[in-house]
Image 1 (tube, helix red, strand yellow):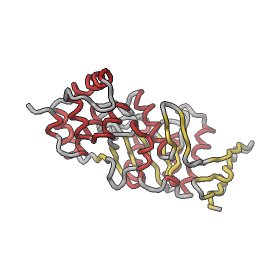
Image 2 (image 1 turned 120 degrees about the vertical axis):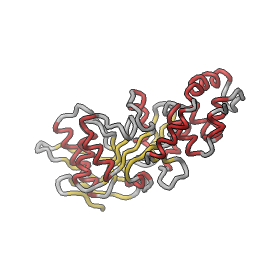
Image 3 (image 1 turned 180 degrees about the horizontal axis):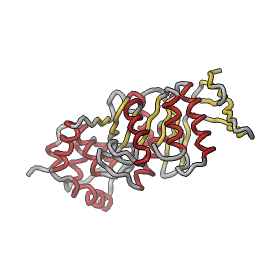
Image 4 (image 1 turned 90 degrees about the horizontal axis):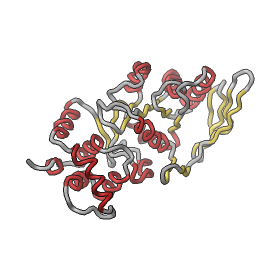
Length: 287
């Protein structure tokens, strides 16, 4: 029987398969993909050929991780996803977020989406990530909700992870304000996790966007919770370098003043070169 790689005919199918068999943010997979493309990356995973710029030991370890997963059933799963209407974006697609190129070898292989994929391709200055504690206080959720409402009124897209606490408060407030919001999930887009936010995530999928780099039916893992942070950071034009350092191309700076009356004002928020003056009690306006 032919190797799986020999039966893959298009780049989209190859990248979908990589999203199924490779761990997210794997620099060995990402570097090979960026240099050789999806189809050739699959072929190299199943061959004995040397890989340019990868030493023999690293190549062997990489192949030991991927090759056993390249079984014939992955092709049937790809067909099943397509027949089930599961959409995946790859570089070059109209709505692929170009800022992800800043992630280098740790860029996602593909993005699975449900909803308005166009929310990923607007100007970077239109997107704001709000994240924080899952075990937030009521006051913390109030502040997150007020900030999300204000930004939604200023036509910013609110990015979050769909988690309990701060992120759920931000998503809900953006939706209530009639704004747009995106949930970056740690599992498949058909897995509503956490279960307590299932209704919220369903609504986001209907009027906003659910996105994940893991294929449908994937359960969330600790590694994915960590890996998705880089996607949420990239939505703010933050460029991760190495393993931890962050270099900002654009700065979104706010001075938050917590008043005794629980009024929050965000003064002189700056997104790119457009100044936005924000008063959380009276809405937002550009200056």
